[in-house]
Amino acid sequence: MQVRHWAVLLGAAAMFGSAFSFTQVAVAQIPPVTVAAGRAVLAAVVLCAILQLLGDRLPATASAWRPLVVLGVVTGAVPFVALAWGQVYVQSSVAGILFGTTPLFTLLAAHFQTRDERMTRRRLAGSAIGLAGVALVGGPGAVLGLGSDVAGQALILLAALCSGFGAVYARQQVHCSPLAIAAAQTLCASAVLVPLSVVFDQPWQLGFGPEALAAVAGLAIVGTALPAPGVFWLIRSVGALPSSLLAYFVPATAVLVGVLVLGERLGAAALGGFALIIAGAMLVSRRV
Image 1 (cartoon, helix red, strand yellow):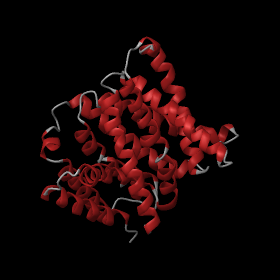
Image 2 (cartoon, helix red, strand yellow; image 1 turned 90 degrees about the vertical axis):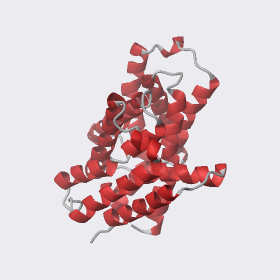
Image 3 (cartoon, one colour; image 1 turned 45 degrees about the vertical axis):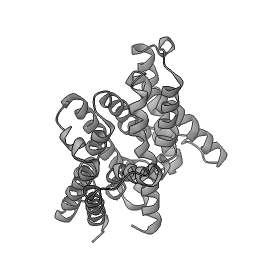
Image 4 (cartoon, one colour; image 1 turned 120 degrees about the horizontal axis):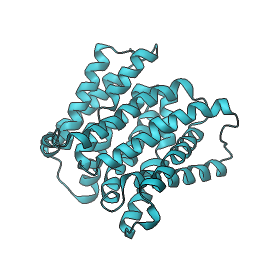
């Protein structure tokens, strides 16, 4: 990976990392399916507007849309609902650690579906080292929370699994621009989630305050629309496995924001976690 790839990965991680905090605020007042639907719809509106402004376009044929529909369900609708529902029961720090399993699922999928991203001892070791680093950055409180709410944590793991397998699928089956992929993904997710929200939640009858609405907007724009094209560009440029390393840097960037913006102290465990994340990422991203 070149410097530009690392820059995009870290920037996307910083933005996507906000999704866990935004979700935590939103699900306190809004049912998770409606949170997921709002995330998808608003992100789709933003991405389609950018698509129009830049003169890009969505695919025009049914054959091009078929893999995008699959991608929209696997990497959009299912993870959006799973993350929102899981965070009803799981704290954002625990969710960040569990989502850090994404590279392991990506490695598993890539091993069976690709020729150039197969599982090796180096890649497996790098994935495990990176995950250990995520746990250290998350802190002892988050680690001790693992296993305390099995259903909620299983939903977060489902989101990680879908993201891992979806990255490999996107690399192999989808062939339009990264911006068009992101727009189509959220459009297809919206087509699935909006009817579910209408049937199960009847959102027009819900009462929620401006804080929850702002959280959904932040989740859709900062946590979805802005980083998604960069992630799909990484998948195309460097492969599914290196791009999945984003999941390791999500909690790390959240800690860095706390240090740089809020003046929080960086403990020895977090520093050790950063070192492990970087070491694991280097092992996974090396081509030879």
